[in-house]
Length: 128
Image (cartoon, rainbow, N blue to C red):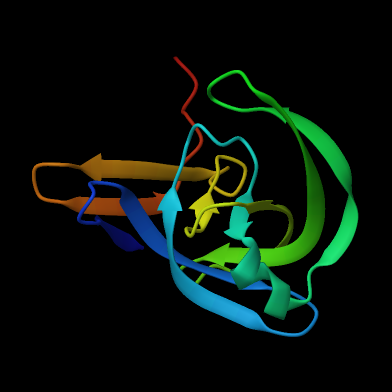
């Protein structure tokens, strides 16, 4: 699947997030520093009907410790099948795609051509 760089220079790719009531398909920002699966703005998450499953503490990039509610939903990149994921809410206005949702994928960013590509990663071949 192909993505692009937005006007601010962030890599973006299509994501679908589904809750108990609704689904949302839009472009999300790939954030490899976020080790979770998906983070949604609260205003985008509320209509979906995500299931609250707990609370956890996280260390942010600036070292701040933050306690967050965790929700269960389903997410997929591009045309991939939906899979259950933990979803965090954020105070921003962007959907963040984290490293957990990118597991098993190879992300290629070509800043020169302004292209982003996400493919299934092939397992490394053993040395002979």
